[in-house]
Image (cartoon, rainbow, N blue to C red; front, side, top):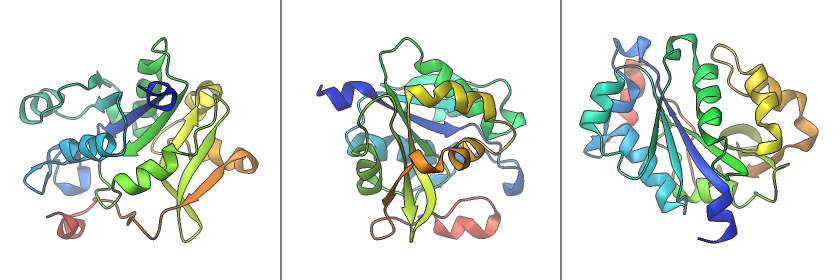
Amino acid sequence: MTRTEDEVAALVLAAGGGRRLGGRPKALLTHRGRPLIEHAVGVLRAAGCERVHVVLGARAGAVRKQADLGGCVVVENPDWEQGMGSSLRAGLDSLAGTGARAALVLLVDQPGIGARAVARVRAAYRDEGSLASAAYDGVRGHPVLFGAAHWAGIAASATGDRGARAYLKAHDDALTLVECGDVAQAYDIDTEADLGHLE
């Protein structure tokens, strides 16, 4: 592995229960013939991410059975119903002691974000102080890259469904925006209407 491959770990947040989708976990929605979680892991691998941690929550047992997560570190978040913040904390906790110096965070419900966008954000890594985010026409989005120096602060502020939003806003001056609007679409799969984005 090169230095970057060894030091940047990928983190997929895939714990949501799909409340607005009739209680169907987003990780198990089908996209291109396979579960959405497999698609997300495949995107990260195609972007050069060797180390992938996956945070599960809703129906974690079913996701483990139905999706091929071989080679991934699977983290179960018992507090997933508290929102994305708890999953982000669980994911960052799982990276402690692994040698990772940055976490590249991708959401499972954004299949319009492919390997080219992920690779661009990953390339913004410099050291443990790195803080970078994809941008779409200048508006911050996902994926995001958090150097390890930021993990404690992010974990302390990650509550409800806010994730790292408050932390990123407070550290806007340190954030590198990486424009990805030309290679990706940042839509979410949140409602029945959004299912039309899946193939």
